[in-house]
Amino acid sequence: MNHVTKNSLTLTDLLITVSKAHASQIIEAINVIFPKENLAAFNFWPLQGGLSKSQVFRVDVKNKKYVFRLLDNQEPIETRPSELHAHKIGVKLKIAPRLFYINQQNPLVIVMEFIDGRPFSRNDLNNREIIAKVMQAIKKFHNYPSEKCLQVQKKIELTKKFYDSYT
Image 1 (cartoon, one colour):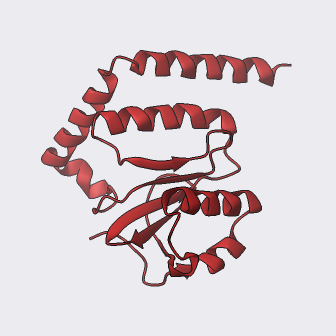
Image 2: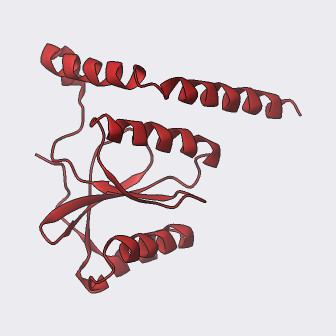
């Protein structure tokens, strides 16, 4: 069960509902990943669930499924490098979906592989098997050699934010 809503949006429909910055990165991502595809063929299926304010869509291209994640442009851009670094570590550890597109200067759109499943629920907190798998993934992540860099980077960001709040 993958929590895809029933109604899809065409590319044109999606582009008129998002910011210009999101729209340009969506087009850029499509041109980078699918340079020969007809733009009219793209349908965006909204996905439900998740813990962020991002808009998330499934896109099917040639029997493969992708996720287009549109990051909230109200989120501070300073948090994005840490999130992307953590995601890249997750990909290396095979605990996160493979990435296909990220705009390095101003990441607003991330395209990754679609993993069929369902959102984590409160009921899952009572399922020992699920909790064990989550804990194994967290342990893998925290044991990754460059994860300490991520912690230091986060501390530097928090210190800077604290300093900036008093200047």
